[in-house]
Length: 354
Image (tube, rainbow, N blue to C red; front, side):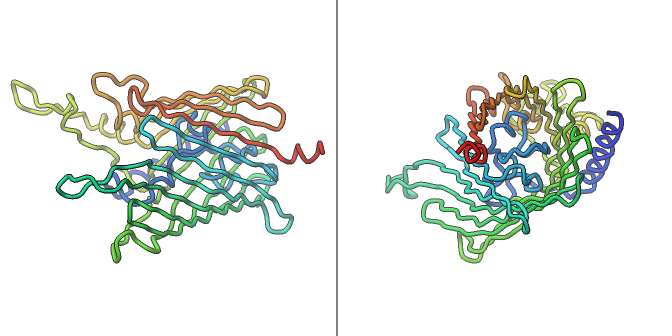
């Protein structure tokens, strides 16, 4: 246990140094942002958009291909995300292992932005239109040793926003370390390394939402409880946004000066915007209870007079024979929850019974 804690502290220190030396970039950077959306209910329940948990869960591989393994051979998964804004997204994934080339996961990822009412510059109504984006992914994973595994996702991307269309290509690369007792897992991931092949407007190419991430998880020895920590956006230090409507940014009515955070406060705020925390409690290997906290999401989306549970997520998973069903309810803004539903099916068990 102490050895695992030391490894966790070391990884945090290394990632902290990477963050401090990275160049700042503005929010909203890049196109095809849907590639980084959380799709899995299990991942959402622990607060992030990926996990470092090596337990043959196919629903984790879309974001972390180094988790693709022989243990998920002939597994199938469906995921659906719904919110009150009318935007729906999800994916379907299937895994197959070949003795010589390794294990593969094929998936189709989509997002549907819904129906829009068109209007011209003068405000006159025109035709209705739709917007949607898709990514066809082929993931590959291989175990290099009992402790280390690697993986990659290749992506073909198509986007249609009204009459504008775009095609792109990208890859994710990842590596995972798992301790001998399988209680500690750490992953390093580079996501969306690629380019637009056909931009929305001729000659105007936009970068993809590249992100470097580190994930760690530690399972306790005598309690079926796993803690997860995710370090995100490691190539960008400054993720803050100065909102003039925030009461904390309003000038003092007497002095006219805006109250500023201390140097230590700014550093702590900046660092926490890269950290996502989660926990998963497993009961009798059948039921899992999950909770997550995303500080960056809370700071960006909370209502100043009613923050509520913004940034928190809570979910549960139920494993029954060959089926694994997960549900998560995540709060992005007070009164606007997002619901995640994921179903995993072990078709290999069905084949054995036949």
